[in-house]
Amino acid sequence: MPFVTIGGITLHHRHINAAGNARPIIFINSLGTDFRIWDEIVSALGGEIPLLVYDKRGHGLSDIGDIRSIDDHVDDLSALIDHFGLSKVVLCGLSVGGLIAQGFYRRRPDIVEAMILCDTAHKIGTIESWNTRIATVESKGIQAIADGVLKVWFTPAFHATRLAELDGYWNMMTRQALAGYIGTCAAVRDADFTDSARRIAVPTLCIAGDQDGSTPPDLVRSLAELIPGARFEIIRDAGHIPCVEQPEALTALIRDFIASLAPGAETHG
Figure 1 (cartoon, rainbow, N blue to C red):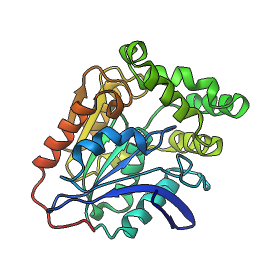
Figure 2: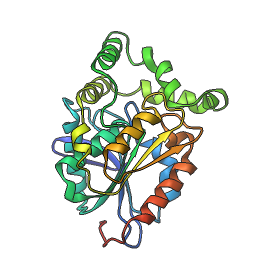
Figure 3: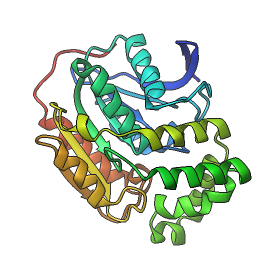
């Protein structure tokens, strides 16, 4: 398993190269998950587009580190991009991953060729809702909220017919490091990219699952409306994590979006 230590933080990652001059896509996972949520997308796109997935700080097999704000996650993404010598990338962020993508663009816009912002927003939730979640997790553990969170992660149809996968994703969420989960909750609580979203000047695709209970389609649409020229798409029969629930539909949107970009120079290592 590939690991790299940069800036004092060891990150678990997977880098898949490809021939040609396609821009590398970096996938940034959601709160309470690790990079395996992208497995179906990586399997479909591997070999045709360079891909990089990684466990963000405090999740999966990466170090927990100290998480004070989204900027800490941006630090790791920035260091990882520099480690691989990438000069232009497409960022694909899900939920908090979309906030990290926006934060990276605000810091280093010259590196970002385009963005795919999936089931995310310029601001997610309220101070009160995040403080309530943090207090519950601190006192009772992630298990106390897991059933409720999975109800917004996945549609009722998923809950009814894909029971083994549901158990697996319950395990994934509840086995995340408590400090990493709480720190990232606080980072999401404090993040607000409303103003900076208006200054995004690269092609951007905003995607929402039609049954997402965490970042509903109208919220994702409001992000698309802030970003000049952004495209908005809805994936049917999907909750908050369409890369798991409807990977074929998400892959098709990604392929179409990448094909719409102007031809680029060789950018991957």
